[in-house]
Length: 96
Image (cartoon, rainbow, N blue to C red; front, top):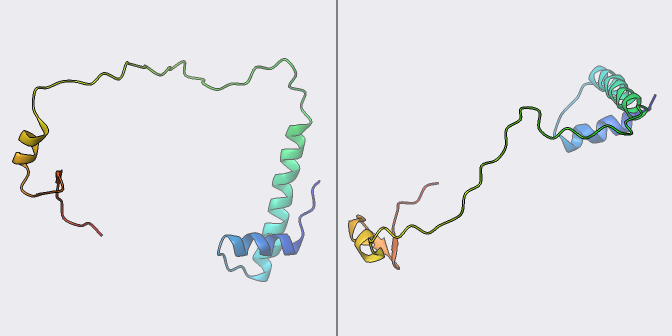
């Protein structure tokens, strides 16, 4: 089983901006060690000849050609509908 040190747990807690009590560090050290041990067990499996599974539902993307639709309305006509415009664009209020 992979051993994770107390310093490793404290470093992960610092990276995650977590404040841990001493008993939490000990508990997490054991839990993370168990998780890493389980992952090591998975790496022992023989997966030769097994195709990777990317999609299990059978759904596929539907692609269409990107076609410009000429509606017959000019930029100037659309800008004339805007309540405010600036630099050939529709001016909108700031959102913070």
